[in-house]
Length: 66
Image 1 (tube, one colour):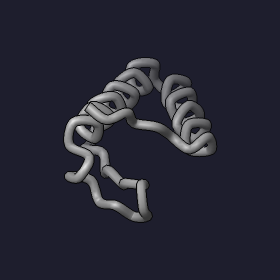
Image 2 (tube, rainbow, N blue to C red):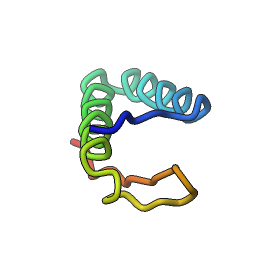
Image 3 (cartoon, rainbow, N blue to C red):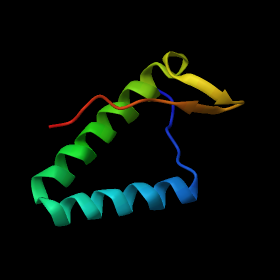
């Protein structure tokens, strides 16, 4: 499995989004973070399944989370 790494700005944006969603409804933030972790796992296992937008950088669209 490949290691999934975030650009520092992307990691900050992710943490801010989780915090915002938790303020709206605690369970919402948890569900969002769980979906992020599922995506990280999928990317780590099958990196070529995500579109490469720049050399070494891949984009993965999240499924809806509930």
